[in-house]
Image (cartoon, rainbow, N blue to C red; front, side, top):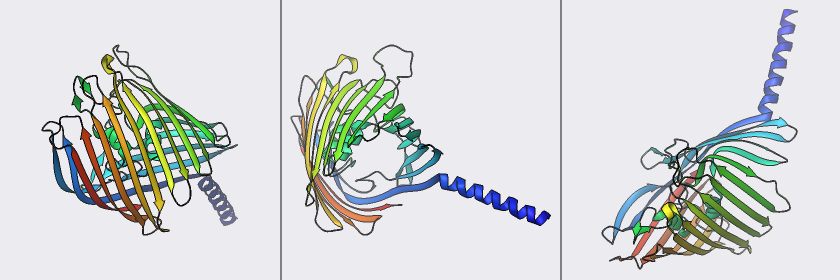
Length: 354
């Protein structure tokens, strides 16, 4: 009798455990990319170009490791979380965000349902999302003219002010994000991050608003952000807006972007006007050709440097998770007093997702 009761209890426990496992899940995932290449960059102190040969990490997408999970709460409601950390697999180091966090790529918890999605914590900003969606080289800070324009010359001083690069990180810390459901292809998001300080000065709350339409081969997205200077993840007071679009013809996917970054830190009026056009061509079932041209005109009231960048690359998938690529980019920084104003970089890479 005792043995029978024990077997019944064990079966009940296994049934409960099985149901719990079916309703919730946690997964480990990530991306590792190694590169080797020859890199030229502008030295804006000596006004010359410097070349190095390097074994690197994440020239296309920054390597990372992540944990994420979800739980079905019933009635269409679901709890979710994600924790992701950047990696430099060439040295074994971990990379943080501007705020110095170990989980520098993502660290959030949220609820989703028929109402949409609400997320608390560090979550991608819409300007960054727009940036990688509508150019062939995605989030590459080496080969994407978009990302080089937004982050590549940050902190460089010309004339009386600094270049108007993006004054905040790719993910907004201490933020609340709301994403709408999909209404016939239309979606929108609103992100808010309080300044979290009682001090006066230039600090203010941060807002980001985006709207997108995706239907068949057409994708369009518009973004507006207003940011302050409180905390290490928000380093400039800015009002920025952007518009991106793509159309997939099957034989080629065309992409275009336009944005204005307006820096108002300390009463400044620095601007950066940027556009990018690109195309992604599936040459074979496994191979993809990428071409992109971008141009940024910086305005700081004294000088107006202009950055032009052309990139071409070929990506080949060895499997669903592994691939290789080769890419070349050339940049020209004119009207900046450079002795050498052209820099060329080329590299090959091996990528693996897990």
